[in-house]
Image (cartoon, rainbow, N blue to C red; front, side):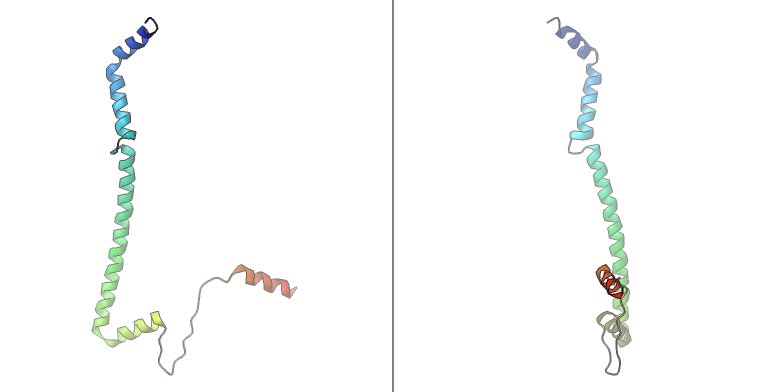
Length: 114
């Protein structure tokens, strides 16, 4: 019992501080509603809000385009030409691509040139 007496005295002297520290640790890190979980959820909320803004802008652009489609056949023709590469009988379509060429084609040409 003599060995436990200093430990029990320390605990009884700082019982409120120990209790408060344990409660703060439980609420801050272990609990379902912890501070860490709260910050994670706040970050997720901000990401979702930015995604909502993006979709609202996309929706607004689509609504303008839909309104333009209802006004006349010129808008329908423009979309058909741009998106689906449609053309009249007397026209030719040339599709230009900005995609980079694969590196293996460039090295093959360099080796044969030497």
